[in-house]
Length: 308
Image 1 (tube, helix red, strand yellow):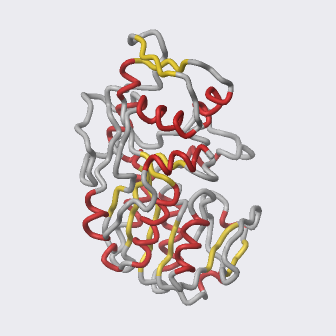
Image 2 (image 1 turned 135 degrees about the vertical axis):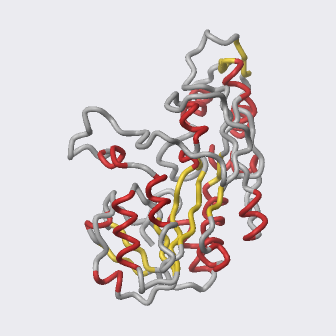
């Protein structure tokens, strides 16, 4: 396993609880509380993007490699080359930003909005490298890897080698404890400040985007690791219920015991983050049907725990 800070600890704990032996490859810069039987391999090669796999990791008796942080084509090739003839399968984490709908939201794809819910066979973006900057980020920038970030290319590599079957999990907006993006912060901060009103544009208020509570997403990843029928499959992951932005803020407010109100104003008064006419809701029917996935934590309980 190559670790990802928000999700990896939850996945590791679940796998250990099921009796599996887990070895994690990471830089060692940050340690979290993990089961004592977890074996750690520390290497600078585990920085993003993964530049190589140390011999110590290849020599482990592996069944499944869980690649939590594929950045793009090159590090995907590095991992696949290292573990061919070593492991039986690779499970890798992708994102629902591969879909054309994401490009429409951010104005990098032409045409009308894509229909939702978006299933795994929906059109992908045609424009690559959505986070690349010009000029490129400097070498000492901690976000330098984003210039090379492209999950579409990583997916193509990982799903294209029949000698080492791959599984891709396209994740939604993940929220909850240890979320590095602090997705709830912009609303919780206003609520903590005692603001009586949160204003929303009428288009933004009804916008829906798939989210996933960290423990639910970790459960989906765990199933993909332990179930061999996940081989050569791509799965959307996300909570079953998708709230509008107004409903989502309402759930956060209830958890935060906020007594204010949400006010919807006419379009044009508040800047929008993109084309909010494009909904970003994915279908998770495939993983629920094929792997028996279901949400472990109901949505409103998840919101409450994330706020806490």
